[in-house]
Length: 377
Ligand SMILES: *Cc1c(COP(=O)(O)O)cnc(C)c1O
Image (cartoon, rainbow, N blue to C red):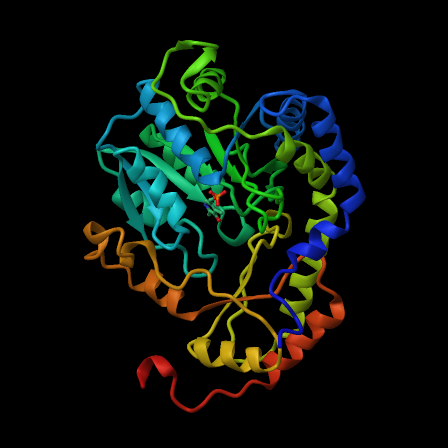
């Protein structure tokens, strides 16, 4: 029996039930369901929230990343076969966006402490064929963007942020979505800013890119029946946009709650076999996930499950070990593989009570592993 769920999506949205119903009703009654006022208003509001000049709604987070790279190809900034540097321990979507465009992912080991892109490792793999870097803000913490931007400038690289886990993460008064040349966001229901279905967006300060993106996600067309690109259909719809406007107005309060949970976890979890996440700067982390590491990961997960505490693994198999990518299987990425063997995500959400957090801490502190880690048995 689950007593403390990993994430209670029903409860998350139930808090705003009345507001969401009002928003949805206004869309139903408007008679306008695609590319209308709600999308326009959400793009304006979310762009402003991120501090970016443009926001373009799309169908989901994967499309956001795919379309930016595609637009850079259309604008002559990327060519098939160009290399894109990306941390090896990211979610598969980051890699899919690169290979979908016929580009070559160059997987690098992350920073061991933050699990984010490591600028030293990035510098080491830059060659004449390197044209872009995909900076993933993993688990909700900003990648070291000042260092990444400086390196990118030095080598003339495009920087795409994968901000799918980092809505509102902030450093030096600059948020996720306003550091790179473009940024992809997901509003998948479980993300910090979650729709009630699939949705995504791109932010950028580049006028030409924004214009190309608007066409590419709409059959390659700005004007009905005139197609300048072989585009796709990837649009944010009015229903999701209306609900996202409601959710956006509560995002900062939700983030504040996540930060309270994270600081309690960091203060109270004292079991020496559990490694806590490291924070570079308080405001740069929005705690999409609270990921601890332990060599006794599978034992700890089972133990917590027996006490009604649900945990998840982000992620069990790294992209280079996926069946989908036999061409990446020979990469030597021991740190990435170690992280995948040891990572465990504890429950965290805007509706989790502090009593539940305390209970998880106590359970973890009581945990005593069997003598030999399972990985060595
Ligand atoms: C969720 C996620 C995506 C993809 O978003 P979808 O909306 O599910 O397509 C991309 N990158 C990262 C890091 C994610 O966590």
